[in-house]
Length: 297
Ligand code: HSE
Image 1: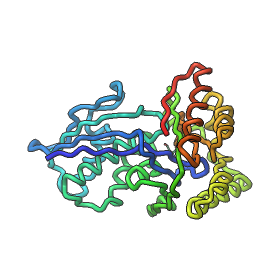
Image 2 (image 1 turned 180 degrees about the vertical axis):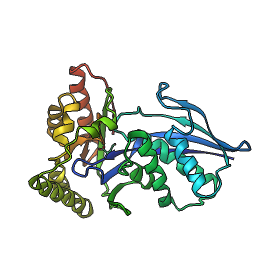
Image 3 (image 1 turned 30 degrees about the vertical axis):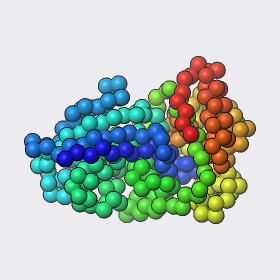
Image 4 (image 1 turned 120 degrees about the vertical axis):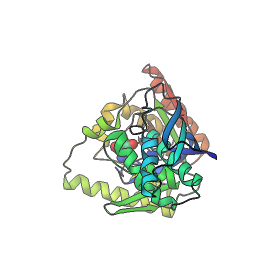
């Protein structure tokens, strides 16, 4: 018995919602082929597309480790499982690469075992995978990869995850410059203290963004896509970040920001053509800096 599962890339943080907001895109994404076998234990048969960067040791790889946890939790630790992983996006990209693989793996095992757990119950296993991948079990990539659309993590303890309204006609341009930023490092540089003035601005923007999604109010979404806490620090990791942002806004972006912990950047817009022009303008500027990139709309 085997299944093939796709899980999408995700844009975590969505500018103002550090660790609490994320959305899924249609492409790119990772794929997992999983097979139940007669030989006990979880094995990784092969990983394609990772340039040999990901561990094949089942205890260290986030996909297999999450599947092992899942099997233990449902009381079937002896199950034989063989995993083939197709990485379609690089690690350390800001596209939620590890989250997509982990979610695809958990969805695959749960499907093979006749949906033993409801879909939302897979989330804690996926978060443990993130913990393994970058030292912190944030949910703003795994939750949208699993649930689709925009997702809010209202609380981590206890876990309270809310699927938000995703307005029709929002188009995302996603650009991945060929640089590597480890989430672990991008988390280390963030300031641990926030001034009350910045906090007020930030929570106003998060609330504004969520309201904007529900009201399908593009102007409100646009006004709210501002980050006074994380972006001023992390933008240093992305060459010419503020020029890239200006280029995107000039093309009509509602907002522009770092996707997850970067180096990928994203822009929201209201139609396909605008998103394509934003992608082209950002990629063009990166090229002038000698940086190649992948672009998705
Ligand atoms: N919220 C996480 C961070 C997402 O910004 O570190 C990582 O992709």
